[in-house]
Length: 373
Image 1: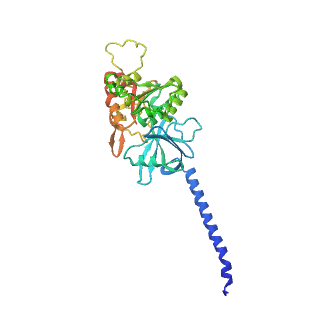
Image 2: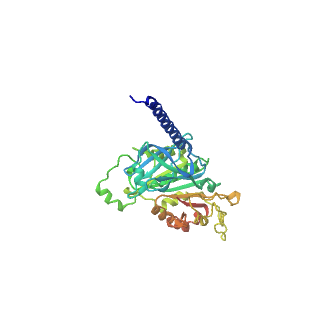
């Protein structure tokens, strides 16, 4: 028998104390983690984990990813993005959330496409429901409503997942009364909008060059819609005749040509009163206004631009807005390339198809502001 029986009898209390301390520490860490997850976002300075709650496949290469932050900021009239972090290689990218389905929708939903060889794309493809997505933001973009001012028209030319900022801008403008918008969306394949791909005979595809298929209007009840087509249909139902949606599908041979864009920007107007022969278009009232001067926007960035005050005379303050969003090649083709300067991507001068349209129709330069996203 041990001469020190008290030592054996004192062991269980020490083990109990250690276990209790461990449990208490775990509870503290769990509470801290819960507090960190539930109370730290939005945060523009730090990346914060938010739970992935849904993945809805759209096509073989795209999906709608849903996360559940504790709160969703509302930035009425302004575009906004958040940053995703790939924690394995420490890279970050900006993504634009889709507009909420209603005032009580506290989800963030992102329309994403898998890009071959992309580090962030590969990471997002592996991210499943129940995992964390690290977010930083929100980062405010252009104030669309302030730039629209007293004008009423918005035209959106979107390629692929550039649809997300286009939908966000449309919702911001159409929430104002007496406004209208036309959304022109270009996709590569039909399975982006329809769950079952229709197969065309080989001879039909080979004869596409003989004619020019035209983009189609999105109807109120599209056949076998994908999740993103459902989003568009719901937006169309919400705003009715004030929102027109047309879709061009590359594999069907339809694209948006200059005539499609001209019709969207210049709907048939009533005959204007004749001007004196010596009168050309009046000088734009937006000259030297940071909100409306197209030339001044060439050096502006879409991420966290200064919230300038409009300096236009009140009766004419504002411009109709044309937004071009999508991959770099798409934006460059229609509106000219963006430019890098000082480590920041800028809008760059207006070019491409839209600049050529402005030269043919000078009123477009006077009445419309073009933004690249």
